[in-house]
Amino acid sequence: MIEVLKTTNFIPYVSIFIIALFLSLATTPLAIKIGLKFKIIDVPDKRKVHKGIMPRSGGIAVFLTFFISYTFLECLYDPFTNPIFAHFFVCCAMIFGLGLIDDKFNLPAKTKFIVQTLIAIYFAINVYSVKVIHLPFLDDPLHLGLFSIPFTVLWIVGITNAFNLIDGLDGLASGVAGISSLTFFFVSLLLGNPSAAFLSLILSGALFGFLFFNSHPAKVFLGDSGSLFIGFFMAAISVWELKQIAVISFITPILIFFIPISDTLYAIVRRKIKKEPIFQPDKFHLHHRLLSLGFSHRTTVWIIYLFCIFFALGAFASVKLAVEFSLFLLVFYLVFFQLFASKIGMFPSLRKKKEKEAE
Image (tube, rainbow, N blue to C red; front, side):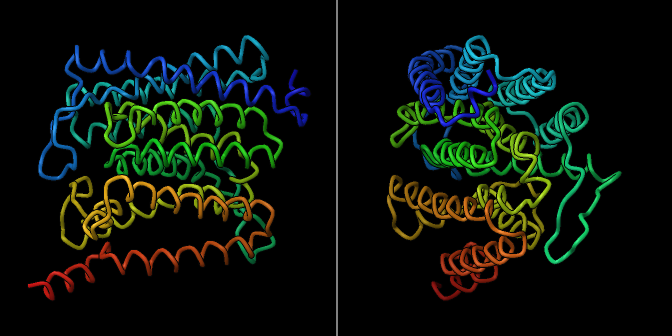
């Protein structure tokens, strides 16, 4: 059946996307009821944009949709015969469980970070770890050796938290993740990876269905159960099923995750300069700065969506380009975003200057 999935027959792909989409539409109202009944809710504060109490149990719908859709696909096509898939889903279940507990009890940031690291280590040992990377302008690849597992763990934990940090506006994290997973679907098809294509498409369908309830004004939030799950999934797919990307260059997944990664790095720089804890929240993320410029909630989200699509086009190009040209493409995007981020005041030094001018 694997050979059937490698053909240009798109019916199985379209079918699983529609199944995931409608399952998400069906399970999200249930997730809302669960959130309200068990007090899995988000209470507004001075840092948050929403005004009223909201259920943050949307991750239940996304994870449940993903699990049911995958089970259906497994029974119908049996495309995933490798036993490491079991380890992969154990990791997904654990990260989802961590997020759900946090949504209910508000775990300390350090506790979440430690558990995320342990799950990432489990993944790196039992599923896949990046062992070789081809660097630009070098004939021989870089063999990570003993650094293989630490490198993989750092990547997974970093991407997981990057998606968690951008979950600040209605529909933002779910939409960005939906675009990213859809990008991975097309990239994996280019690379001949049907398993990765199906998994990415399932998540994409689940997220686009969830967006019906999560778009502004939202009826439910993803919560950490959702944002941690989708972040972990994205990171895991990038180093596991898309091994061609991981081995040749990390430029493609960096471009796919460019918005979450850059927003997270800026946040770390800001907090280091201000000598604040890395996990200390603030209101100077990309979406906060766009809102401060007068853009509406919905417009701000769509601007970030367009950015994601813009970077996704670069990711497609990087798959077909030589590593050296992909590096130049990445540098172009980095310079472009740096200029934009400086303009809107995401960079601490520029922000302070603007604040003084305003006084």
